Amino acid sequence: MAEGGNRRGVVFAALVAVLALAGVYLTLWSESGDQEREPAGASRTLPGSPSRPEPSRPAATASNAPFDVYSYLPMTKQELAAAADYAQRFTAEYGTFGYDEEPSDYGDRLRGYTTAEFAEVLLRTVTSPGVVETNRADQVVSVGTAKVKGIRQIERASVTFVVTGSQTVTAKSGVKERTADYAVTLIEVGADWRVHDLQPADSGQDGDDQSSQTGSAG
Image 1 (cartoon, helix red, strand yellow):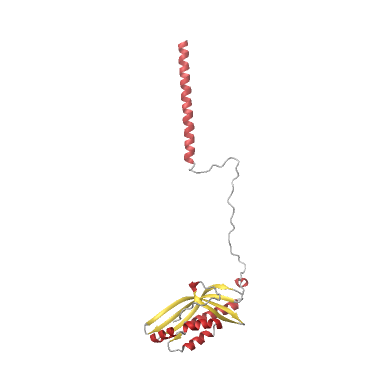
Image 2 (cartoon, rainbow, N blue to C red):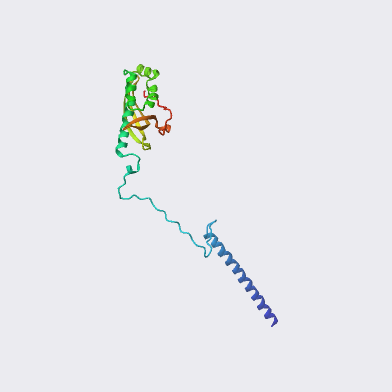
């Protein structure tokens, strides 16, 4: 009888060991599966912690109601249109000249558009002996046209346009087409507009009172 009891004790102990090993295996397998399903670095939300939904973002939408942009500008539509026309005509005149024209006549045509201060700076450039002699030697004749490309700056009594000036140039050296963008600043003088400055558009001119860097029209 004692021998039979010992055998049952050995069998029972073996069963306990097998079950213990099975429990350890199942525990390790479960943890391994959780790690595979959860990406590295993922945070776990603790029970009871509140989740924050992404806030809604309002979208910019256009209304069907009339929108008058001129009501937000410091000048009327008519004033702005007149200034744009003036800038175009001046830029076209700036690009129109001929070797057989007296430099003083060319200067007077431009002077009619400008302030007295800017006229002195501009005329020193376009009527300089070097420019005049070069144009006469090559028999240069230039016909200019212009078109407003955009508005760079606008205030109550001044506006700076970006104007594209085009020239068709005929000369002994051949026919050329030239195009350049200018920043043309106008200011109000009494009831009229006057050109206050002319700069290459890429020079960053803002319509201030600094000296002009206007290049030769020829």
